[in-house]
Length: 421
Image 1 (tube, one colour):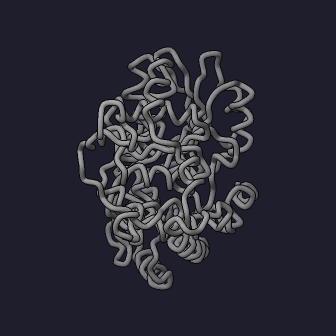
Image 2 (cartoon, helix red, strand yellow):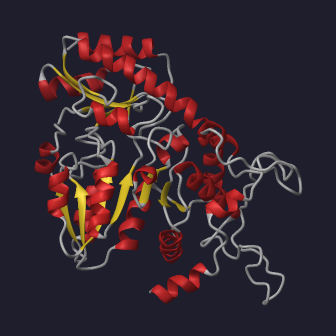
Image 3 (cartoon, helix red, strand yellow):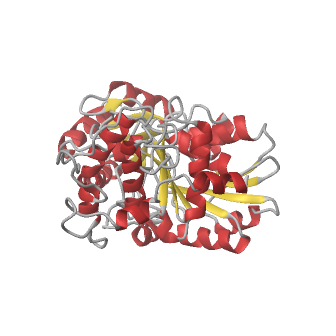
């Protein structure tokens, strides 16, 4: 396998970091300055006007194959077949790596594809993974329903307890899988401390940082080896496309993920890549607005007599507020929150059934529209009920994803729904 990976890697275009370092902020006349702010990188990072036409946006290369000048010059231009590399997708992969602070990335069909690619790439039958006991429901399910029957082992552990994480490591452990903040309970993992535990044990640490976004937290900056992003969420941010990314901290890890991507034929479509190259430009604006609105909404919820509990990393009441302030950048804590209402599950379901616009009852998160989600029957229905309840996800658990609407309008709708209980 190692020889195959090296052979495949020799056919790859330059990695994201190397390619982006040589790119210009505008067409070839100004050097790219790598220490500009992330807001500027989100707009301009790694992108040049088209050399032939001057088009300011990256073209959509809807081509399955790419003509070679000769046998001897095979892959001289970097592209042969779009299952392996496509120019539009490669631009997105390079830009995602830049924003996340990685060496390179792969962009695949969904966030779950990124998770599956990670486990497929770095675990085999007989290997063991220490995984957070509260994660996106699909992550928990694929571990139980696909990888455990193939002979892999998983220990589901409370990652807020560093001693428990350390104690769960076995001689055959190959991967520590964290998620921060967790979906949907918003527990935080101390990424620096967990990365140290992983390095001491000689295992890889991967973090799903979808809720945080790279605008708030970059796991690779805290010592993680790999980062998972569901691009569907805050990268897209408009309920338009689905995609995922697996970002690597080193060339060796990136080459392995590229091999897995190629073997599985798991590459994002050029059109979706084009759309995400545009939508991610406003990530900073959206995440800032969503975070500020979420704080205002959660402050309201915490004071409402029909709300028993509201959890948001920005609130002083969050049990890990110190870690949130230390680990999250820009004084922001994201657009995700959850709350329980007086009256239990029945009242919560009534609220979700009857809440009015601008809230919308559906799955997904991170979009411009504000979304309210019944996790027990939507995003986490595939968890075993006892595991779901143990993780704190009750039948009436209310998760909210705050959009970019006027927060006063969102509060007014919540207030009306709460007062009707």
